[in-house]
Image 1 (tube, helix red, strand yellow):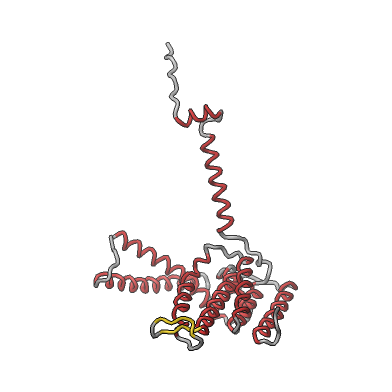
Image 2: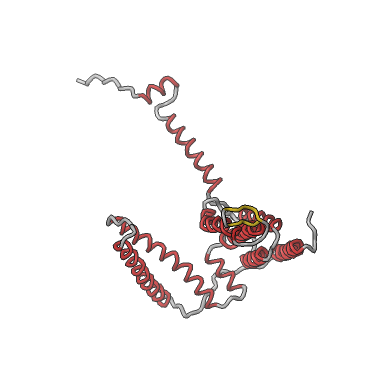
Length: 293
């Protein structure tokens, strides 16, 4: 004899779906879909973007970055420095630099804040502000602003031109430009080792926190941090030896093998010539030879 069917219990979500005429769980899936789409839009807006400068030869990008940085460092006008910062921001945007990567500018900006607070009181000139015996000058403030604009412009142009290339193409581009092979090899190994040392440091710090270590200003904390630095150096040396042995096992003979072959195109020549003309005009305008409206 079959048992009579038991009545189903209606939950709050089922009751709401019954009143709205939708299937159970459909509204929750819709909310999740809307949330996912919103997260996707945020990732598109603030996440990593495509490099619009990838069509150019990496060697041309390195040369342009060096020329732009040299030109910016030589500027003496606030107007031209501001224009250079705007151009560097545009290049960083074209190079796919995301807002998340711009967080690496925070140490530089903190240093610039200290510079803005101290340099006006160190340079003599027209008094702008007086705090007791300290007098801030307009010339000092202008010099601090000039350094701020030039430093940010150089960093942004390096982010857009070289930072988005990655370590491998950058080292290959430097080797293609004639840099000695030993220096390229040291640069490549240094970039790789920095990442490995950073991972090792994070593991050791995690192990210390797992053992309830809380850094304080006492002798025990300083001893523990000293042992941390010492063990980090020892493990880095051991990791370097293992890397060297692995390279020798793979037939490394001291020569850097260039696996990437770059092709210089006509657009690279045109961009390089146009950039040289523009940078020369900027230098002339900064020197007062050419007046910019």
